[in-house]
Image (cartoon, rainbow, N blue to C red; front, side):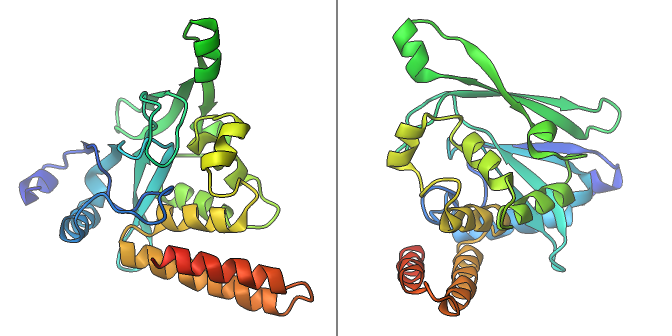
Length: 247
């Protein structure tokens, strides 16, 4: 990006295939080389004021990412759209198609409508019936689509007795039937370690930051579990999880 673009106050969308950060399903696998990932994040931080949205795919899942500045303030967001292709190495998904709504004057994204195809039903009936799966703001109870609002949404993933992650996890798999999801998923929407994996993928966009996020939160959970009378099995699960995330 050239500094002249910023001086002209041009507003841009960034559209690409492979996003920065790590795969939310494949335990921290990255799609970009480390130096390219770091350079991309640096550019976005520098020009965050002129970037109206970032749109990627590649992971075949419905998710998002948040980019923070050096003061850990959310400054930009990335939407990762599910694929029409149902195949995926680490787990399938229903086909998905998304329509964004934006403000003509400001270029700001104001909402999107996510559609999906129930693939088992389509195969059985020999007919494709695309349905509205959800609208972003209604589904996640957002007032606006900003880096700050999505940061708050991600924070709710790890809050007890909050349904934000349940809603996210269903969308992440594009309403995959539960019997299929149980084979490929990370333990389900009520699994704390599963929520942690996705939270760290959404908010930590380097492999090192992701690994540190998982380890530090898991250690905190382990400390809390150690004070519980029934902590033995919990500690064992957390230790196994830490080893998996660090491999």
